[in-house]
Amino acid sequence: MTAQTSQQRPRLSDARFLLILLLPSLTLVGAVTDPRVAAAWALAVWLLVAAIDSFLPGAKRSPGPSEQKPFFLWLLRLYVPLQLATIAAGAWAAMHSEWLTVLGLAFAVGFVTGGQGITFAHELGHSKNRVDRALAWVLMASVNYSHFMVEHYRGHHPRAATFDDPASARRGESLWRFLPRTLWGSWASAWRLESQRLQQRGKGWLYSPLLWCCVLSVALALVLLAGAATKIIVFWLGQSLFAIWLLETVNYIEHYGLSRKVSPDGKREPFAMNHAWNADHVVSNSLLANLQRHSDHHMHAWKPYATLQALPGPQLPTGYAGCLLLAAVPPVWFGVMHRRLDGMAASG
Image 1: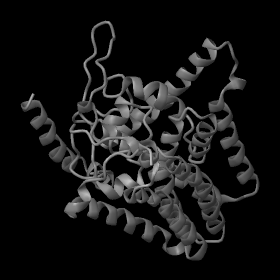
Image 2: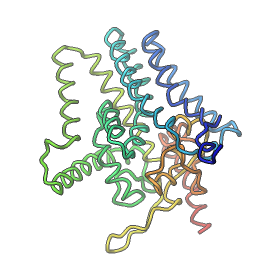
Image 3: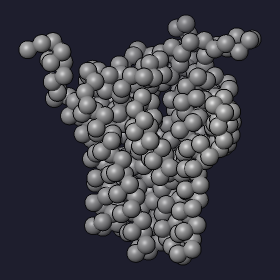
């Protein structure tokens, strides 16, 4: 057996990424069988993951990086139709449900589309494969946040952890002050960057996937309005809003209070492992395709998720599931994170 063949053999630890398909599958089944309890199940999963991350010692470290295998990429590709089916099932259930259930369905489905769908769109969007990037656009359009596909790659990655990045939170900035700044700043930056790209290529707006995704979203909303499908509209927009909140809160967490030096002529310090917060908790990393190994991702954006390493950079107090709850209460978040920032500053 050659060394290359040995590297391609699946490891038992690789199976942890099957969790990528578990949550949307459970949500889909819940929307079909008993939509009234979908929100309760989503909340229970959220709190369970946060508890495991925080209190189970053996769950605070993920297995080491794997060799890249087709298995990892196909998990993300298979997720895409599963998310679309989950949204469709949620819309169907919402149409036949009481208003409280409609809101609960929006929460449950948004928990999946924001927690996982946007995460996997992010990963697919870094692919060099056009089909994978198209799938990423589909996922972002399904939560009405297509401009992420422009701003993240051409805006956030070059500017992360600098004052110019709307998706990087500054020390002392609460989540609730950060959200309006990043929502407007990211949207405006995306359209500006897309305009520049089209001008550089000598093309008009008809060649912009960003424009077409926005047109299709508006067209779908108008069709639903014309059909008086009020509950479906509320469900669809509700899951989008919660998904967007999850995305931007994770953005808030990932670079909070960290900064890169920028010279007077605008040249940025190279991104290093101390410019992003990390967490290597196994359950949340398995659900989120190693997103919490964030320093390595920014330093090597081309690396597939399974190959990312846990670097000894700034460490979060717990995984993203728990940090989302901490960040929502600014005094608690500041108390936890400022001690870590001060400790980093003291150690040089």
